[in-house]
Length: 228
Image 1: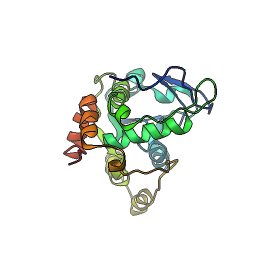
Image 2: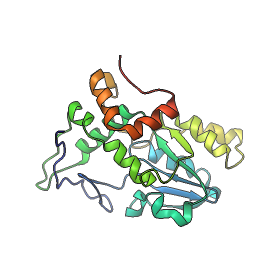
Image 3: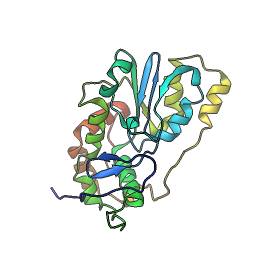
């Protein structure tokens, strides 16, 4: 397996810098939201800022929400055991190829080396060879010890968030309209067409190298985003 990331890579300071393996991730909307009966933890690059904005429409349901500029916002469910045990656990999710490309775009745009030079974007081959998605999922769930009860699909954010919130509170027509009209937040602009980046074999390798993510995706979506 090729080494795709060098050590010492950092992002420009935006609040507290949080080490994350081969990168240092800036605080960018991956908080944990805890209510009386639920807890939501965010996987990076799955519309976290937008989801946080949706939660803020219902402040009466929130007991605690991590600030975006503190290290604790990257906390796993295990690190908040006293606050989340016995509650309905939720998290965002998205298709693996899209998530992988988004992560690579984010890294290439914001990461710099210690000498200040930009970090080159990983090639599609490099993206497919590393179990980065499984690593992020394992951190959130403490290697599977915490079961996510509700997955909120990024591709169907309004629909899935509405369904989740309807389990927690009564939603008015105005609430539903406001949720459906909520747009993307801090979304990066780039070519999102996966077929312009990956070959079918690279997609297959990406799923093979991230079996945990693949198993969740198949369960949540009913299939994998394989290319013919």
